[in-house]
Length: 197
Image (cartoon, rainbow, N blue to C red; front, top):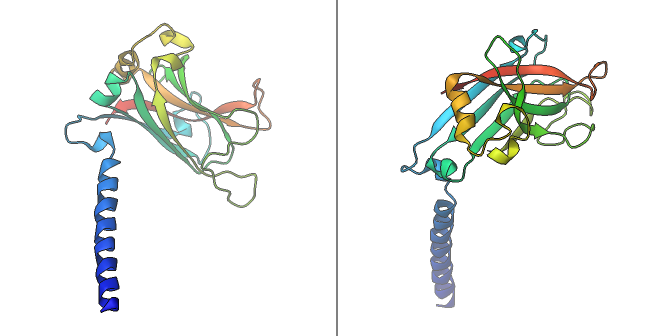
């Protein structure tokens, strides 16, 4: 009888735990997945050939931007950066103003290493400790990040989204190169125009 009582208590406790766990998972569901939210996605497919002038690299990437009422109410845009086949450490990822066939000024920074040391976020080593191959990073852009360039005085995230809608913004990835002639050792690596998905 004692064994049956313990078994019953164990089953009830397990069912309670499963119900609680399911409730917890549902409560953490992303607002992006709520059926009442209307998402608008923008994507930039990144490659070396998109640079002006083109860069010979195996690196590729995709940056996805997502907006909906939740983000507009908070005056922000969510983004995810996914870079692969990197041969050099990423120093900076920026959104620039410009058409496909032109270079333009930076609007906002999406990712930046804090020092000239190799990037540490979600990178994996390939053949050696110094060779980084992947980078994943996500975050949100808001008007306070428009610290320079044509949107520096903007107070509304829709100014950035309008650039996306007009096809007049692109993502630029800069990587560290030991033979670089630039001030911080960063050169263009891959680039892609931002387009509505």
